[in-house]
Image (cartoon, rainbow, N blue to C red; front, side):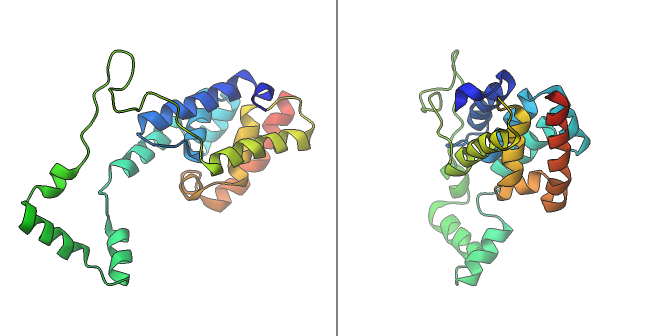
Length: 194
């Protein structure tokens, strides 16, 4: 299937792995494929997304902020509370038994980049696609076949994302209304390019 991808679509998929690595993700998710498109997609596609307020910088910033948030935030505390666990009490107990900075000391240390990539932490190798990200790639092929297009372009990848966004990508794209607005615009872009 990969041989049917145009150069920009292929670069978007490769860049998804690089963005996943930069965000310290163990897997390539749909949002990383979106980042790849925002970085390597055709100019018109990136402009269309920028008009909708979706840029590589804004998505990268949102994902980085999400990744650096408190490991267990307010939503997690509420979920734990619903099953009888008081997160604040757990934190207090940890501080009493292991010291005030116990949680800070438990955080993983940042690896330093070497000359040719990440340190010995193992972040340099292949990062696998999640099942959902693979599904988006498959859907992009289906979109191209349904349109009788000979190649899979960046627009087809975006159509795959729009058909099956995960929760994160759904939010990054602006919800169902924005997704329904984007689809015909992407189809029109593909029509113009054909």
